[in-house]
Length: 82
Image (cartoon, rainbow, N blue to C red; front, side):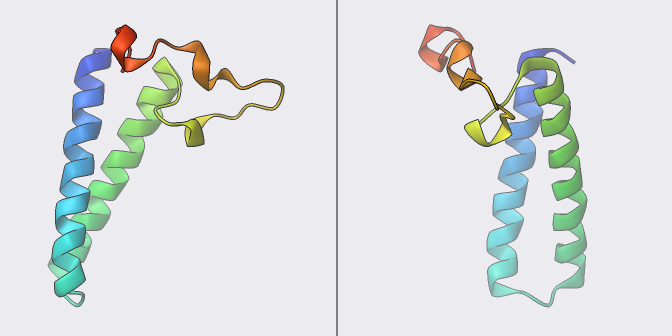
């Protein structure tokens, strides 16, 4: 999967999680919705991990810097990065 395809997958899965999360806010005991949320939460985490292993962190939270701040090393979105 290419970088842009993987990023698109992460964005789609993130949207699903927000959407189902909003539903669960008003239907907290809906077991099917909770199972759906947990399924897509796992898929989101896997896709995000795949992306970060191949291309680096998506957000500063994904960094594991101990010597210097590497978050700024990649191109910014307006420079052609994601």
